[in-house]
Length: 144
Image (tube, rainbow, N blue to C red; front, side):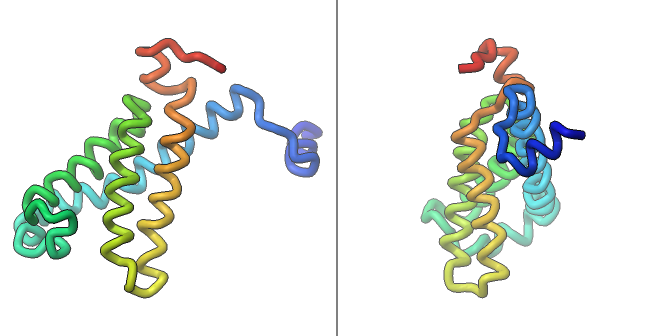
């Protein structure tokens, strides 16, 4: 109990294990919250092919939709498992940057969600997968 009180009130740093657990929870949250958006796009694929946000990156609506589904499904699953975490986070961050650009002039309630996701994925890009990830198994976790 004293460790918790010290942690809260003395602004103590997380231990290495604590930081790894925090990164794990952040990855699970960031990937898990995005996954339903990608699955929804798969389920409504035909509807989205008619007008996918006015071709947001200029390569055509269907290729943009396919890339978005890749980011929101495949990269979210990779992030959850900690597999190529930085690459997955970078792709998801780009996806949310495009979404933020598209919603830039909408009300704040609409714009805030892609911006929130963008912040999460930028942080995960900086932090990497952490000790509790497939990356650490494949690439031998280095605590430095």
